[in-house]
Image 1: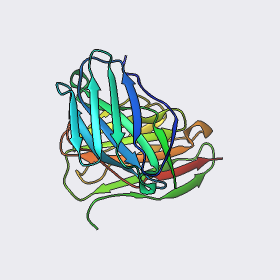
Image 2 (image 1 turned 45 degrees about the horizontal axis):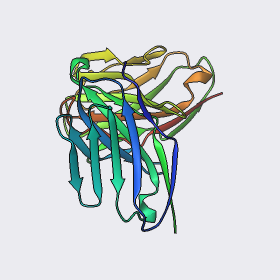
Image 3 (image 1 turned 45 degrees about the vertical axis):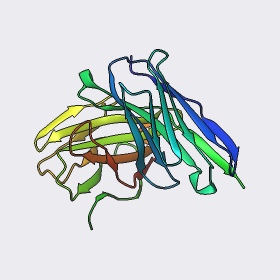
Image 4 (image 1 turned 90 degrees about the vertical axis):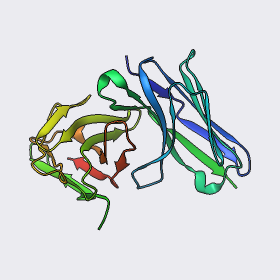
Length: 112
Length: 112
């Protein structure tokens, strides 16, 4: 199966770290992605990780991948109110034409 | 304007009517995609196209028709709209299936 699951909601205080989690079921995934959707807008790619990597860091963003547990996380350091959005994880699967399969999205609310 | 644009942004239609959502991209990307976004389901792929005149079904194609006569356009038609097709529709494009997908702003469709 190609299920990608995320928790629905996360609330943090400004300045704290946020950790958004995602689990997937297909071990054939090639890349795993994190997209951000702000209100009324389309999705923007935040970062991605190749499936043979364990970690990727990009400024305030850290992606951790545990292939054994099929678990992906996105850590946002020093979370700001502008980080409030819906975050989607997605996987591309090599034997499905690399089409993206999205999770349901996690709504991050950052309180001042 | 450069980028990927969808029209209309908002549409209300009646059950049984035919409605077409437009998508236009200026990058000459090979791949184009249509997703629908519903609460609890995240984004689900309706149809995609790997090149002009090549289209294929995604996860939820029933009730939809697409065409790709030109690389830059990928219209999505609901032949006989149903209330279950009330959703937000996103078009996306990418150079290849594994490359970053760029999303349009979305079309909010309400079927009454």
